[in-house]
Length: 202
Image (cartoon, rainbow, N blue to C red; front, side):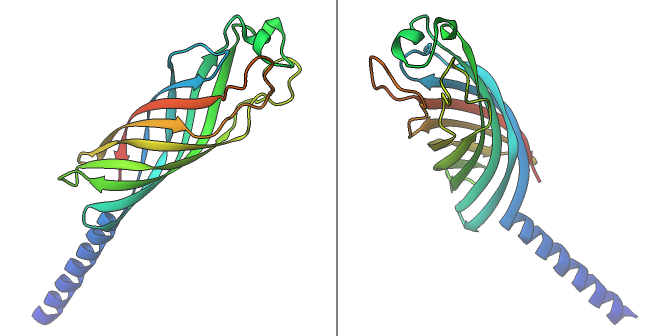
């Protein structure tokens, strides 16, 4: 009986150790918070507008001090055109001046996690692939004001506390998301955003 008890105890300890190791290797969670975004381009007001982001993530710790993190994030913010917008672009009218536009994206960041002296604090860098999910036909007779896809770069910090995570990152768009023709200039439209988030790591 004593041998049986010892065998069961050893199996239980092995199972717990394996579970803990697996949890450290692969972790999941949710996060959300503020999304300060702006559209950088002629005809749009300068300055960041307050929005929000919400999503989930998975972390894979490959070796000591380094891992990868994939996310699926919904983000929302707004931008506003200037009172000269209709003078710059084709297929728009004066009613499109001073117009507020929703910028909603479903994004997939693929990030490298690099420990900064401690596993609690990580540098995060990598690409982000996004698809616009808000209405792209927002200006007068223009069929599609915005392109559907976007590629961005992400850089930020991740603080992992017991259960709770805190993050801050800067995101800059690499490609032109403009879908209409310019009359007086050929400037690009590129998204920028600052995300401040808090979440739960399981």
